[in-house]
Length: 257
Image (cartoon, rainbow, N blue to C red):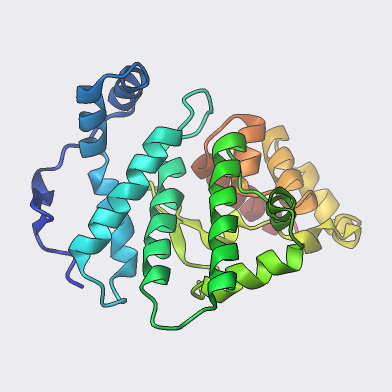
């Protein structure tokens, strides 16, 4: 797949507009009121985001025009479901949805055959997942998905595993010019509920040297097992800010351990 071509699906990528945060908020407000022109400007102003996402699939041998069109579907879904009242940047919310839409497209076109019943269960689970994300603005657990579908948790796990491509925990999901957000940043780590770590005296002493916000973030992330998105929603900052503060706090702690 060639990602450096200037024109994709008839769109001259070198001339795509870039919207400021204020412009995006203004257009979003107008869109919610039914302004179709504002909607077109908003979509056009976020096509660069779609381009940045499809570059991560450049080793699949897929046609770049096809991936761009599928990515645009994900972008439109993100626009339709985005909640302005939440303190989350649109790009942070939209990127996972664009990625999800592309992954669904790749699964549908996968040469490896998965049984119809297993595939149907997986797609129902993905639909419920999207609905719960839209409703709660956070990633649902497998248990929540299984309860919504009224089927055993194990069936959901088997179905999703059957259609899922392997992904590295260190694969970047989004990059806003600062520290990248990786797959592992989106995953709760249940082993960190183990109180043996918190009882370690050297770590407790190092924690005392952090400021109030850094302590809160580390407690939520590593002792309560919450994702960065959940932490961001709880304390009212963006996920990218949580990522940076988390890394800074851990670096400070390493100096005293």
